[in-house]
Amino acid sequence: MYSVIIVPPSCGSVAEQLRIGSGERVAFGRACHGPGDLLIDHPGVPRNAGEITAHRTFWLLSNLSEDQTYVVENPEGAGEHVKVPPGRVEAPVPFELSRVTLPAAGDLLTFDVWAPRHAFRSVRRHGLDGVGTLPAFALDRTKRYFAVLVALCERRLRGEPNAPLPAVEEIVERLRPGWPKASRSAVYWNIDYLALKLRLRPDADTAEPGRRTHGKKESLASLALRFDLVREDDLVVLGPARAEAAR
Image 1 (cartoon, helix red, strand yellow):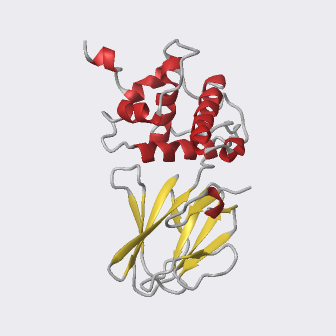
Image 2 (cartoon, one colour):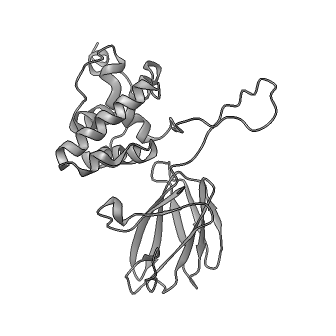
Image 3 (cartoon, one colour):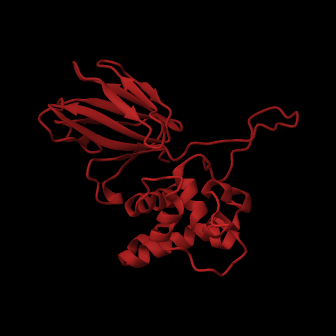
């Protein structure tokens, strides 16, 4: 079972992603041509630039360059980042969504690393010993993907069980007050990430592009509402609806 997903630069499809489980490694660099390696074909990148190691539900970064510091950013944070200096091995990265930046002869090259298996459990133990029960679906309510999921389900959460799902453009407009840089591509990205994180069946990926997106939205909304992954109380992450804000 994979726990970490590496998204290469200019990744165009799910098939190009690299998925590894706990204890497995991926080497990256200019000369990394082996099966399962991440080739970064740029003259400013070392031949063997580093390694990514999956460790349970997070991952470790080794910087094998001689003189370049790598930066791992949380793209959803307020400037949160980890600096990994040259020669540092197995630096732990705590972010669920990460962007690795490599300085390369005047360029800044990036690739993404996802850790969608991040797990949370209740702190209420009721006096019981032993390991707690892990939740079926681990969602972080502070992430933008959760706001996208709530916006997707908003009409049905507001008492319209048969309401059509909003178009991506409508989701963008709904999220923009709290997320000024919201865009169609960002919402599509979060929908794809939610489908992966909630382990939806990949059937919709074989459909035509328009139907594929609609199929994912419908499957996500159905799953989220059926299992109470989003509730009416979660609408607070969206702020007031337009009609309420206009009063």
